[in-house]
Image 1 (cartoon, rainbow, N blue to C red):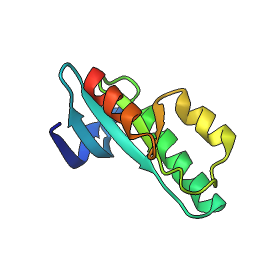
Image 2: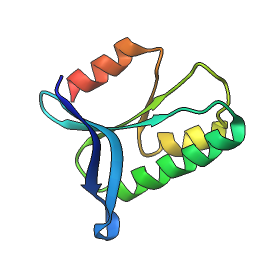
Image 3: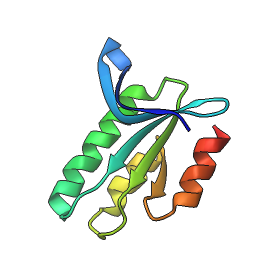
Image 4: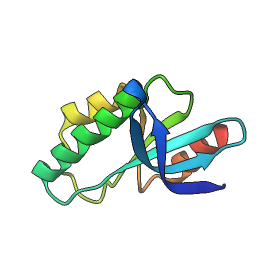
Length: 105
């Protein structure tokens, strides 16, 4: 599947929002952000930034996917629930689900 890393998309207030990847699916593009951290406090900061980006991109038509590095259990459940309101969350270890979501788009 073709993809481009580090893409800026126009978000709310005409501000540029950088996503980690933009993948071209058969019918729809997918904006992808990655959530990875080795400690709880940094994971919280990263989760808040991802939430902000998805909020700013909420009115766009791309599928929104957050890929969660699940090798460490450092994420607050309330942060993940907040992100889940605006994006699908897929564990990095669940490559089949990630592939299925990208191909369905």
